[in-house]
Length: 175
Image (cartoon, rainbow, N blue to C red):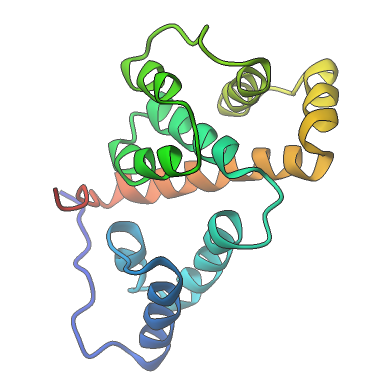
């Protein structure tokens, strides 16, 4: 196992400041963020981007963000990300039948056109392929170009998180 131990108290001043800042926004941190407390400078940047996507500044609607994260989690086999975001997806208003279809790897014909377009964009990013101009234009008309750009960046961000989780055997959250 490649698991990195979470840092033990007392934390360095920078790690403690980051811990306090992240928990004030998220309520608590575990898993990948606690592992990254071993590298506070890197955690600072990753935490800021994660906070942007989830808690402030992002233009991408929450239900579409969570749809993208669940699709990424399912396609990458990232159980940790699924567990952390399934409830968020419900809270953001993503239809339960879409969540279940994603979880089961089943027919996604239940998706409205906008959600279907987001899923297609996520798949293309995972395959390292260009978004067809008609898909890009349609998404830009419906959610705005900045949201389309954020969607692509979000995909890269959660692929990076999955890499950290897999590489260091970050355990699933309790429960």
